[in-house]
Image (cartoon, rainbow, N blue to C red; front, side, top):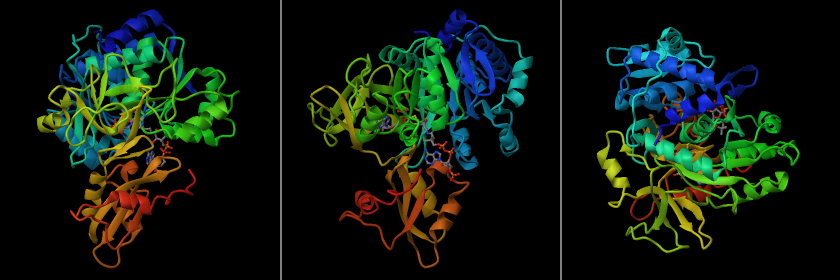
Length: 505
Ligand code: MCA
Ligand code: AMP
């Protein structure tokens, strides 16, 4: 196995001055320029005391230098820990406390807010969207490092935090083998090569933008048209110069809102990929009607990287996520007994293969609870494998809302709401939303009079990242419960199903 960093270095040797990053209104960055930045950053990391196994936590805006920091961390044997830019100070406290990184890199605008974290055990540096800040200044002074710490497939490469159904977020530890094997499988499955020009409009602090999209381009030698955020009109403008788009379903519903989306404007594109949340079958078909392209839907998880994909040359079926990637096994099991189920029966989706993470950081019990004794990981998604061999996801066994591709665990939001004065109890649910797929919605029971929906929303500012905050708060006299006293969220979802039906994106 070669690590993603080793593969990038080899690719850069071949690609030389070819453009790796193309950015509207900004200078291009070639593979060789990127390699030099990585080597300088590796020198800076070493000077900052980052040793093999040390965590490098990063909460920065999207930039080529942030990708270089990722590669440099892998080069020196560090563990890369990217954090959503939406996380608040309170959320960052937890991640830093749990992961105990050696280095925390934040946006220059946040430097003051995080300065109290700096000490003997933790260095704090800054990196801005335009490469400003202390880290690149250090890199400019550093002695570039060409050597790399040797890493095997089982060595740790990254930690990605995912919230859990019970309180605390869990750090999923991914190995070099996880990342390298998954990239290799995807390059092959999607016929992705140096000829491709990828519209990269995803955030780079999650699996989709970093370990799927960016890793593929870095290894294959493709150009990334690197955008700080997704804008449908801009994406359509860029399609005549691009070949591939990877996005969450919200990208596709927003593209379809544009009158300019047509066979002509998408004519030069080779592939549209969707994942991270369910793509409605009707949207899949509507996109084909408009453009002639069949979106290729795939399925993955932070803990497992990509698991399954529709076929590039075979069928791309609306409502199905395809077949297991090479080397990966999928099985469906009974929710109660754990016994494997035959085709066409609905149960838990379990997965095993070189893509499956090592475990949760410092949480051996939680890790053990999500693996079967024979090594299969229990995804918490419900699905079935049809007669055609294609996996279909039919629901979730876990209480989870996916809003615009971001996971929100209701438990975390409920705990924040229940802690507010005047709140008796709450239930957080995901309701169908025309833009985000699902919208986080809170049903709140006040203790007495005087509590207002708006004040609840306002009180959550600064506690929870914006995307986790309820889009709407519904005040109720009581929550529906079953005979066991358990809140019946399915009933709440049914009662309020149309809440966002007329919401304009
Ligand atoms: C932004 N906002 C959101 C979301 N995004 N609210 C709920 N859900 C969201 N996803 C809020 C902002 O806080 C802001 O609130 C307002 O919406 C507008 O913000 P803006 O930045 O303009 O939003 P946007 O640029 O339109 O972003 C929407 C988006 C974005 C394009 C859907 O969220 C996105 O890029 N999502 C992709 C997430 C992703 O990469 N997921 C992959 C996870 P206010 O106006 O109140 O301030 S990896 C994964 O799931 C697995 C492994 C897999 O299979 O890939
Ligand atoms: P995360 O924990 O952010 O990595 O999100 C992983 C979850 O996203 C999975 O467990 C699924 O519930 C969901 N997911 C990812 N891709 C798809 C897809 N194509 N269709 C439906 N759900 C998906």
